[in-house]
Image 1 (cartoon, rainbow, N blue to C red):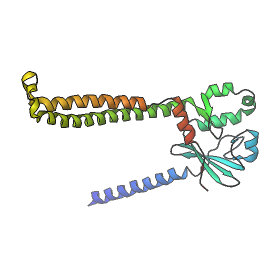
Image 2: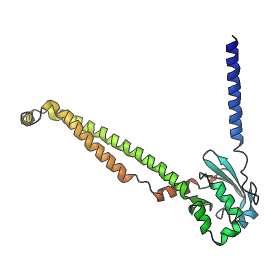
Image 3: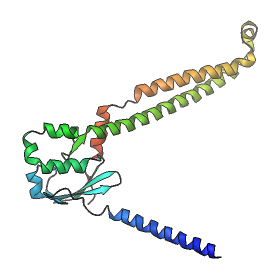
Image 4: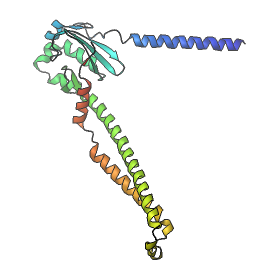
Length: 235
């Protein structure tokens, strides 16, 4: 009886701890990230002009950066709406803080800054896109491509086997080719041979088609990153 009570209490404690941890996890996404001493945890319209941030946002009022399950999330308030932008680059906050902190040094020549953070392009908000993020996206695309290639090969193999099965049994059951049996092949083996040939040809065709049509490269990865960072209107 005592062991049952102890077990029950432990379960309650674990459930309570889980609820508190979940609540804490949700709470941390509600508060903006402190960027640095120059701007604090929110960029206002004056700071936006001073540091040349968010050049393509009309009617800008303020912007704050939050943690997000996929990385970071910008919430931008304008005169007409509230925008949300998700940035999956793990170094996004460090890059922004460094840019603002050394703005006077960087604005004249940004080559060293871009080289330091391996920046290769900028998104619609003017935020940097790094080679590290592109490499990550490209790797994911390659994995998807490989999975699709294998699926296409398997599909081709199955389709070829089915066609081979139909053809093989039709050939075996056709009386006027009995001479084949006497020449070089036992008619009982015809379906198996046709299935094997069909599966092989189908697999090769499926694999080849997948390789030709599914291609992951830097341009595709860049498009995905920029598309994913386009502002979404939430209000």
